[in-house]
Image (cartoon, rainbow, N blue to C red):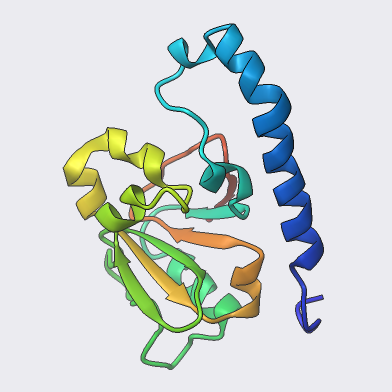
Length: 164
């Protein structure tokens, strides 16, 4: 389905309907029962409409960055993620869709409420300095976001591909 002209039209429409349902039905209940007192932040539209995120985990030098390069066809291009026999990924690299190749600092990503990264602000400045976003014009990234990690870390809200 990646070859279709408009592969994400249905997906976008469903997410917009979900956003409307949240704002018209769920959020009023959260407010009346003071649900926000139980969690640290309010759910943003960016979190509701964000694409699935695939987090690549595993020890160093098992092929996480190589797999992402392969999936996106970045091998042997100047845009490929750096790979090597020694630990090479020193930050969390978020690969997302964009109209042209562009790098975005983690602090900027967390400050942008249209993206789903604002909850990461709670981890502080040091973490955000180790977070980098790269927009790539690739059809696969219209449907999913990849995260290349420097360490084995687990977040229960994402699909985890662990390499052993």
